[in-house]
Image (cartoon, rainbow, N blue to C red; front, side, top):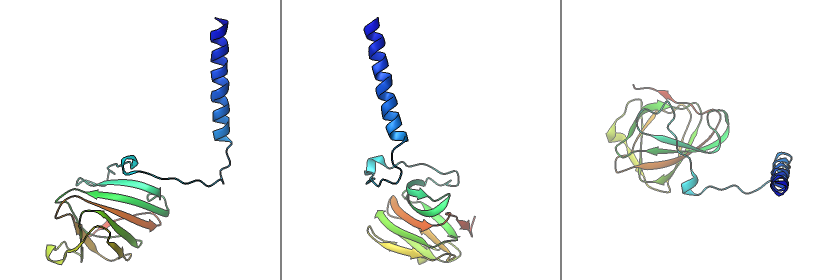
Length: 153
C-alpha cells in the first residue's frame, strides 16, 4: 500500500511540475507553429447555410487584427452578390474558383481562377463566386473583423 502511495505522489509531483513549467513558460518565446492538412479544423459557421465550411488558421476573423482563414465551397456551390468592409485577399488552394463582379449573380461574368491564383477584392466591391467544376478551397487573408453584406437574398 505504501508503494502505491509513493508512486501516486510521484506522479502528482511530475504532473504539477509539468503544469507549472507550461503555466510559467516565457510567453515572449517564439516557436514555429505548423498545421498539416489533416490538422486543419473545419467548422460550419451559423451564417453559412449553403454547405460551405471555414477554418481559422491564424488570428480570429471574428475579432479583428490580422487573420488567415480557409473556406471550402462544395461542388456546384455559389455565393450570391455581396461586399466586405475590408480588402479580401484570396489564394486558390484547391479546384477552380469562379469570381464575378457586380451587384447580381451573373454566370456570364464569372472568371475562373485555378489552383495557385491570387486575387485582391477591394473593400466595398460587389462580387459573387461559384464552384462550377467541383469543390473549391480558397484561403482568405485580411485585417479587421471579417464581415459580409449580401446584396442578394
